[in-house]
Length: 170
Image 1 (cartoon, rainbow, N blue to C red):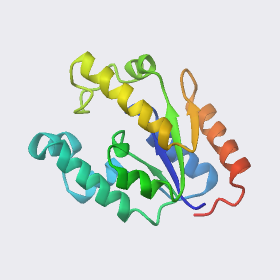
Image 2: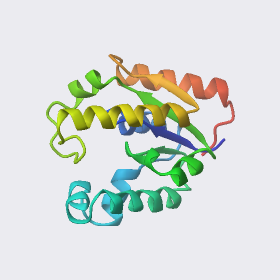
Image 3: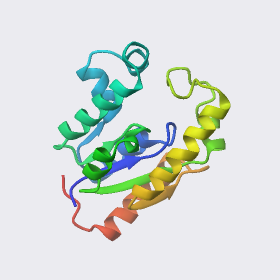
Image 4: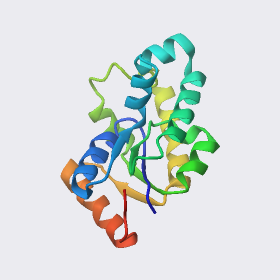
């Protein structure tokens, strides 16, 4: 096992936990969304507005394939929307950072830069429910992040990984 994929809904803490885990385990880290913004020289809201979600999902799939040299990969919330992405992530260990919708709402209450968050409440709820099922289905490990500090979640993930996969390598 040489890849760790962090999945979960927007605001679940994938990037924050990934960075912290990278420091603790001394493994390389990349955030797919940040990679896309750098590669395509524009931010994600602009990609959505200019080209649409389908084009963004394409960029996401291409980027995931390109990021093979990184040990820890924080994915975008919609990475599970394409079967090809799930198949690729199955080559490593996929960790679902679970957060309830009420927890996500607290974390993102001032968020204005996420295209799929700025929909109607009903659309966000439907998206959350649909993706939650997809995350559960493709996850090797599920870690509940509700009400927990970054350090506590990171320690939990680290302990699970080291127990299940004692030979984690970059």
